[in-house]
Amino acid sequence: MIRKPVTIRIANGLEVRPIAMLVQVASQFESEIYIENGNKRVNAKSIMGMMSLGLDAGEKVTVSIEGADEEEAMKGIEEYLSKKSHK
Image (cartoon, rainbow, N blue to C red):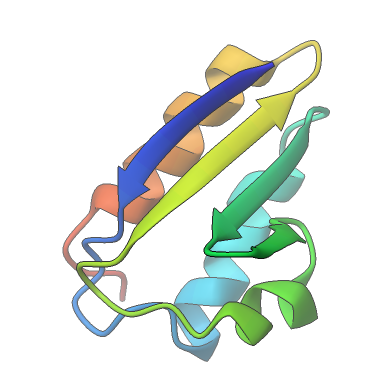
């Protein structure tokens, strides 16, 4: 299992479209992927779960990933969350 703090750098935070794209990125991997913020922990492959977090640019979250492709998954999730814009 890998756990890592990541700062959201997406310009407008995680609104509907960036969340949908994050779910697509997460769904490419076999591993279980969770995003944690405060006391909430949600499956990154769940669009409704991710929307319930209401994350903004500049917020720090903890990404936890467990599975056969966890290292590649962490790289993909971290890269996505760290980009300034997603069009």
